Length: 331
Ligand SMILES: [Fe+2]
Ligand SMILES: [Fe+2]
Image 1: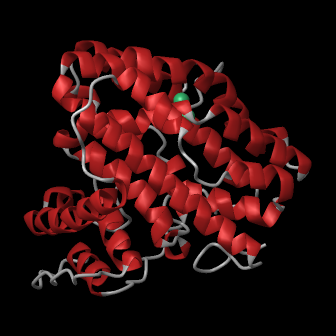
Image 2 (image 1 turned 90 degrees about the vertical axis):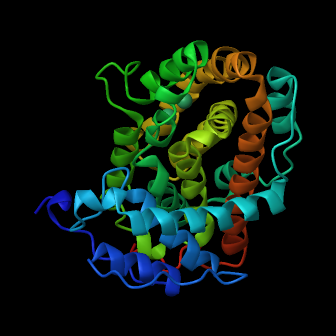
């Protein structure tokens, strides 16, 4: 049976917040729980992830109509308020800014977070690389989709810049028009991994789910359109060297060119996208809507911090010789 014909199993609740969302998805309508002062991040980010999935490909067995269920939307907003406050604590709230074109590369230059790709190319094992791919699958199997929510929300020049990046993500530059998410699915299959959406959801820790929830929150809230553009800018501006290192790591591990293709394509495509991101998207957005400049840089700071926490989580686990997932993947 092809893997897509088999349903993905229902995820297990991790606490009262995710249990409530799962119950609503199954048709129950009990009262929403209060968010504790310090919620369990695994519980909170699973709850938020499940809410957001309804706006993408949906969840198996869940009616499409629940996407706009008022109970779920109200609960999602409560979860988002907690997530926003947590982000403000970690990277500071948006502050008015002037020169986005200079500030974006400056933020990246001052990022002193750990380099997962450098570790992977020097010390990584195939087991570590497969775990890394499993973590990334929660975003990469729908790569580009969260940023596409910005298309109707941006003014003219910034919209054109974003669409030109997205065209590349959706495969326009590929000879066979294969989109990056499909290249990633091929990498997964070539590494013997399950490429069905959410196949590994029960194994993904809060730090991984938070990465995906960050871009979904920015994408699904028009008021965060500036932050979404800052997020995409950082993605494009920090891609070329790490992607080259992941490809080199896979080559050293004996992986096939099919497994490496996703990374190789990004080395080429993002050499262009990193320029477009600043000169044709973030810069023009700040010109057209100067009040969004602070949000653009907030989105950039938030993704740098979120990716840094993710890298540190994996490096800590690998250094201690344990799985970075909640349960290891089968060999
Ligand atoms: Fe891409
Ligand atoms: Fe790109």
